[in-house]
Length: 277
Image 1: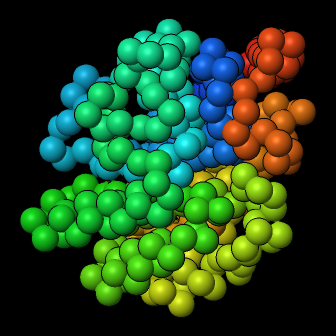
Image 2 (image 1 turned 90 degrees about the vertical axis):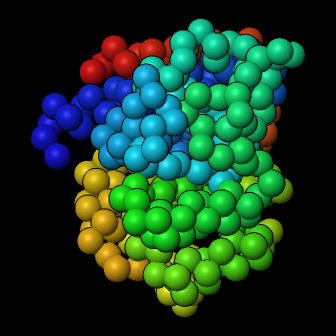
């Protein structure tokens, strides 16, 4: 990846993180930690990778995206807003009565959302169904999904993985946002799914492990994934709360909003990072 493209993606990801903080603060609730950890993945997918059109969100040949960890909706909304699917001003209405941006993505109300998600484990199943449909009808679109590392404790995830492998869904690419923390603590303390790569391999996936905040590694992994004849799981090592110093690696920021003082600190950090580009 050339330097200019990488800088552009890093700048965009910083704007996405600002959108996350704006939205969660305005809502006085939400999930900033896991939204911030997957911001770079979503930025790359929506600004570099996927075949999509904000002017025609339902175009038939578009690539599909499923946020299986639906509670990270602030990240998806901020990305869609930055990409032009709707005004960034809408982020300040997150979770408000009457807003189309609620706590979990709604495919019937939010432009650019391909699947309503929130019940953990079900999003990946829907993504597998989309990939199967494309194979069945000879369509060329790919299906991308983001799973949480706490989410993969759900048995339904592995049922979907088994099915995807059995049906040879090479058009399915799954990211596991491996930030190591979930609502009740570290994944190792709660119910460790490690080694994550070996588990997906056992279910018939090709696996690739990366730094989920490095755009060169994200690009390289996707290039490799698209050449595979298997479904692919990209294990992305990330930092929960990435980009806001006092939120990083802090499980307490899984599901709470910053107060006014914390909001100002977070915005100051992210705006300073933006000015550095």
